[in-house]
Length: 260
Image 1 (cartoon, rainbow, N blue to C red):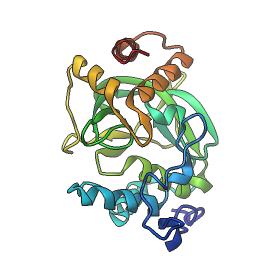
Image 2: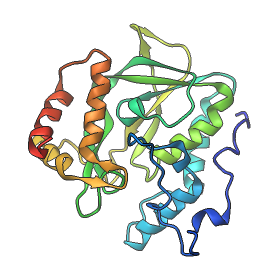
Image 3: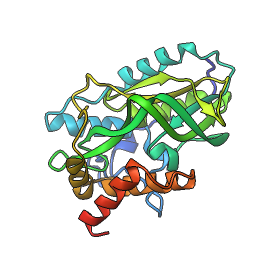
């Protein structure tokens, strides 16, 4: 691995976890969003992740990975990277419309053997433990069309650090090397995505559509509503020329229930 960019997200200060009044900061107080509701890359720091982990641990939830566990997972996964090539990351949900990383290029892409599914329980972010939502993940079978982002070789270290803090919060995903297709051809450069970990306690399996609709329509958390996540995903699918399908049907039903 190259060492370039490795310090970008690891720069820290003890003062960053304190409010101006001297009280410990909360994950909510450290949250930074753009005016149009997009999460910013500045949110993905070891300090904020540790604050979030501590808050959940105080509620009795010790499912979040420590910084050491997360970094170990990232470095073991990147052993297959030659340290010289650009890498593509495949997005199928919010990574399509809010990557929050530096990318050299973005293109429509498709992966076979996996499909997007609302199969991940969501007790934080766009849900709460009291009213959890559902998040998309890639589950086995079928195919999925989405967006792929190319990360330049000299930024792989810094940008995968952010991706791991974003996606590998509690081990509910498995980073997976994939064969990525663009314009009907498999690309030669390495590509990866995040696939559901079926052994994780947040894996919901195949959820009934009525349950998915009800939970997405009602759930809301620090990052906003669960239904906004669905709406933005469908908007990106529309931009890809996919104007009908399971996500569109689900979107229509959620709008009806939510009154949007």
